[in-house]
Amino acid sequence: MNVSHLECAACHETYEARRLLNLCERCGKPLLVRYDLRRAAATLTKESLKGRAASLWRYREVLPPSSDENIVTLGEGFTPLLRAPRLAASTGLKELFIKDESQNPTQSFKARGMTTAVSMALELGARKLAVPSAGNAAGALAAYAARAGLEAHIFMPLDTPRANVVECRETGAHVTLVDGLITDCGRMVAERKEREGWFDVSTLKEPYRVEGKKTLGYELAEQLDWTLPDVIVYPTGGGTGLIGMWKAFDEMQALGWIDDKRPRMVTVQAAGCAPIVRAFEEGKRFADEFPDAATVASGLRVPRAIGDFLILDALRASKGAAVAVKDEELIDATREIGASEGLFVAPEGGACLPALRKLLAAGAVEPHERVVLFNTGAGVKYVESFAEDSL
Ligand SMILES: *Cc1c(COP(=O)(O)O)cnc(C)c1O
Ligand SMILES: [Zn+2]
Image (cartoon, rainbow, N blue to C red):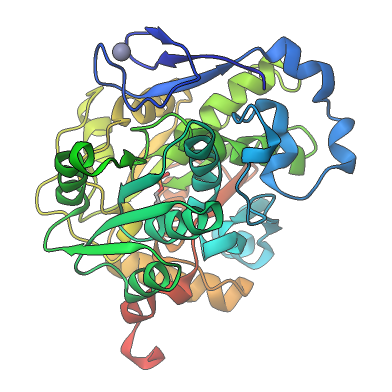
């Protein structure tokens, strides 16, 4: 539609968009989608959005498929931005919101990335899709591939939450459980994909998942009446949502919708797997692989992220922060959020609350500021992680 080209996020080499591509062929870093935003702005106006469907496809002009016929959708996106008045009171904030991504198809925000990635894979002629996943990406790929009539080949760690394994099998995917981490799963996909004819839809190893996830940024602005919050607290694994929102803010500025003021971006990771927090603290632009990664928040168990420099650049450019939270803290927080606001959040979403408390205690967030926490998935998929007295 309005895609002009792809651009390497590191070396800025440009590529024609109408072919299946993974990483930059010159430097091996992620490719990002660029648009003719002037052309997009001709029909995509704040006013025009009023009558559009309550899905992320309302931002059609800045999403990649060239033909509407290739859109593979289950009704994802435009999730509620809920006020959290009791948590605001208990943390001492005036305004606190939770973006509830558990209300997406397959109950996590991975649906956002997969609707665009699978649509583009279909449009560009891929037939067999493969992904390494810590859990929710697998469930989302399985569902969207089935919806598109494509094959899904999924590699997950053996100890992935049970619900993720079951949902993949029940939606027709080929599932391989691996005695290792998501990085080991990624290596298995890489080794076999050529021989098997698989297209690798690992996050940020193809250009389109980030396009679906960037709609988080468009939605926040629209739902806050074209303003942005002061602080965004985001549970970070591969970082696709954070990178996507940061991209969306620039696009919206180019569209003339917002000014150059940006939220402070905060990465939250589990103490047992915190490569970005460590790199942030050490002043590095690239993160070392985190050894012996372990956390019940499976979406955060990403010891090495290919988009590390994009996450770290955004954190620093926004004067944001990176915070690690222990598993006991994030599990306790799921019960606190559940009991006070009625949301049974994923452990990854739970992690945002103790992180926020640490930032408030350090004076890095102030009580008058408007803060958004992300609940990225549904607690019900992680039943085995919760306290014995809940089971
Ligand atoms: C994948 C996942 C994350 C991490 O998302 P990234 O955009 O890859 O950083 C967080 N929470 C949940 C529930 C996830 O499934
Ligand atoms: Zn490059």
